[in-house]
Length: 233
Ligand SMILES: C[S@@+](CC[C@H](N)C(=O)[O-])C[C@H]1O[C@@H](n2cnc3c(N)ncnc32)[C@H](O)[C@@H]1O
Image (cartoon, rainbow, N blue to C red; front, side):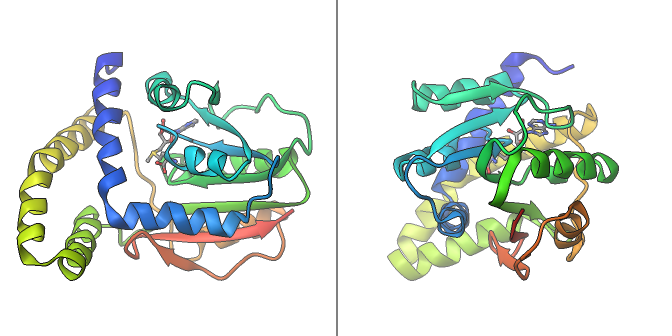
């Protein structure tokens, strides 16, 4: 078992992603897809440190940030003391009434859950979302290579700010990237986090089999390392 100190450090390093352009773009795309109206009740399933939730809150939505990591939720709450967080495991029955949420969003979470259990999680999502409610899912796909996200970042910085800024950025990212590799390795070794990456059409199929309709075509996001699908109940 890894200590709370480990998870605390891990999620602090995780937030370096906020500086990475493909991650920023991913959050913006998801916000647009959700098409938020003021007062809507939205579940961010696997909210982590609240990066998306905070953007959605700014648009006037009421967000419930669910995660099974207290350390991640602590960081989310340190950014927004009014955040509504829920410490819960998505693989268990969720403590919400049927049709409770207007919308549900989940970014890069289901790929950490095995295929059979994902089906149960999707059924729970279906149960707790309102009829006509929208769901937006993003998950990493099999071809996922973290380096491609950084390459895309540096390419964009290069275009926007020129070669000197890019070189400075590369040096800035080296310590953080080493830390991320260290944590990823530790998670792998201790078997604390398995990655069951999605096949190209798997997310779409999962939504379809669960009963969702109006499923969008696959949209490649996050430097083409993940797929976004939206659908309606
Ligand atoms: C890769 S992070 C993504 C966080 C956030 N959605 C984002 O895009 O920045 C995955 C998150 O899912 C959470 N998670 C993984 N499995 C979970 C489960 N079974 N129940 C609840 N949260 C889970 C982890 O604790 C972590 O915060």
